Length: 108
Image 1: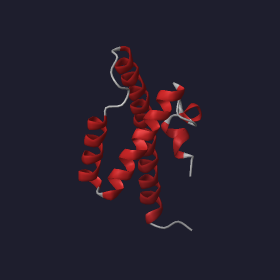
Image 2 (image 1 turned 45 degrees about the horizontal axis):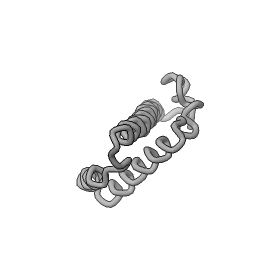
Image 3 (image 1 turned 180 degrees about the vertical axis):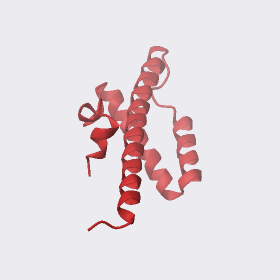
Image 4 (image 1 turned 90 degrees about the horizontal axis):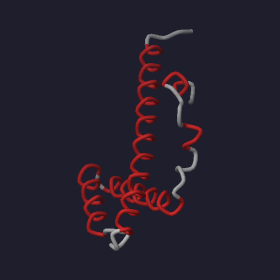
């Protein structure tokens, strides 16, 4: 039996799936950009990691989201380090890459 909420909840779900896809793409791009930055630093003879920049990232995310923001920033840093060491895509990205909005909406 259909209820008045069915259409609006389905649309809300689709919106969340679309946002999640965008976040996944952005996080993947960020990790790859971090790996490129580290390569440039090393080529210039600088340390691979800039702790002051990482601390600033932690502060920005903490200011925006509190303690959960700090956790999120730490995860982003870790993903960047993994991309740096492997220079491979983040695990699972190959399956996500190329999916369209309609395909993503089927994931529940």
